[in-house]
Length: 399
Ligand code: ATP
Picture 1 (cartoon, rainbow, N blue to C red):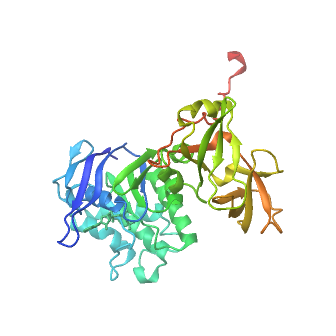
Picture 2 (picture 1 turned 90 degrees about the vertical axis):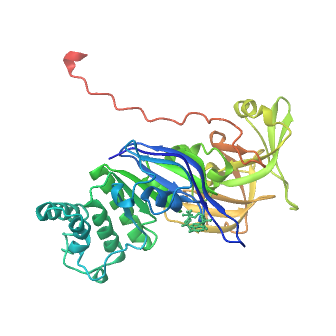
Picture 3 (picture 1 turned 120 degrees about the vertical axis):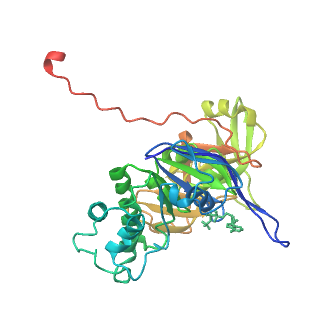
């Protein structure tokens, strides 16, 4: 277990004459606590793999520094960094058994046989490579994708590294296996308690596994926070749109001053339908006072729109597609000027396609973004309801 500190980490790839140099990672600073599970997430090309490769020592650092456990490792060779990396493509030796794939790295490093056997046995046990089937003597080609990835995890585990690095380790697995291996890695984290840094483009993986998520775009950190923080308090439109599925709805419009409060008026885009107009409550009107009579983007997550009867302030949506997901249903449609998605938990959705429905937004969960910079402009939201902590049981004589 070790703390990992990135300070103004930068990577510039020098291009050729046709393509200039490329800033892949731009001044990334990040403090990862000892034993923390941090997920770097972002769209393809945002620089997350390059950050991981610099930590692993597989990529030179153009600027800034990396510390593991307080030790600056910029110029330390990869093998001496005390890290283990798990890749997307497993990278197992095809001619070696599962057991040998796990032990080989330790043999090369000259570990005693008994210690190697202890570590391989422990990893195999934790990762379920012994039961129900003992897979230790199989070769990788006789394993499923999920089993191969577990062997790759085992190979990293036996090293007992200070830090585990994961480079999209689930992307070659089918959906079911992905969910299972995701749980496996989370369990592994709880068991070994090591510092883990995990790279993915999949926000669901980030949300389900991370203690903290780092959202990246174009080489820069957009926001760092717990999954709950990023979901409920995104600092900009990029994070708001990237985290959450189905994605947040965005409505361009204006905040108009009206009788002492503010009213959001949706910008219709050539549609004949009446644009949406809704009066903000006093709390929102106060928080958004500086945005009066300015263009703004209103963001609402699909679960924060509830179908109701036609009424002032309701958002009209023409339903185009109904997607039943089992426990809930997604309704996709169009408002006067924007595409819109609504997520509901009841199932009386028969015949809704082609119908106009009326949606009421939850005022506690509205987000407002500057249309140019994308920054959230309404400030911190109302505190989320916290579940009360269990009251310690008192013996009668203490009462
Ligand atoms: P993906 O999910 O597709 O792997 P990523 O977010 O991990 O994407 P990186 O692989 O870190 O992104 O790449 C960041 C940027 O750096 C991209 O624009 C990529 O094209 C560029 N890049 C990566 N490696 C090199 C290289 N060796 N030479 C030049 N440019 C590179």
